Image (cartoon, rainbow, N blue to C red; front, side, top):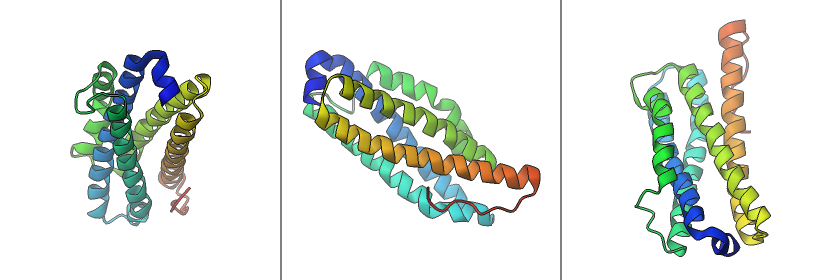
Amino acid sequence: MRKLAELNKPKLIDLLGERLAFEHASVELYDALIGKLETSNDDRALILLDELRVQRDEEREHEDWLADQMQLLGADPRVPTELAELARRETRGIEEVILEDDHELSHLLHALLAAELSDNAGWDLLVALAEEAHDRDAKRQLKQRLREEQAHLAFVHIALRRLAFYNVLGEDVWMPTAP
């Protein structure tokens, strides 16, 4: 992050704060979703649990990594940045679906897909900034997390798609176990 920080450290910290807030919310979303699925009698939901736990753990690692990066830049990750506040407002609708009383698997997966799409866009932006700044180390570290997020997105997308095939077309297809 050294080269990136040299260009505009306050703006970089703001972007990292946004990612941190989003990753923190993602961990909460995954925890809530996993909790709901664990009590489900739906075999399709239960098949998803192992991979969702892996993804939740990766989201937690992303959260920890971002907090560390902010501290290395001299920022307090506990103090929300301007973009972190924006991320919190943006995730309210997704949180409402997953954290509230909705237990419909297709609704839960739809909300998680929206979260993963946004998550991917945020990491993609950081990778592009690192590339443009010729910060090879930051790009490598960011790209690793982007690849993990892309796998999350692919898994949730396939799960939702297969569930829709089942619900709409009556096709009993295998749910994904991993991308």
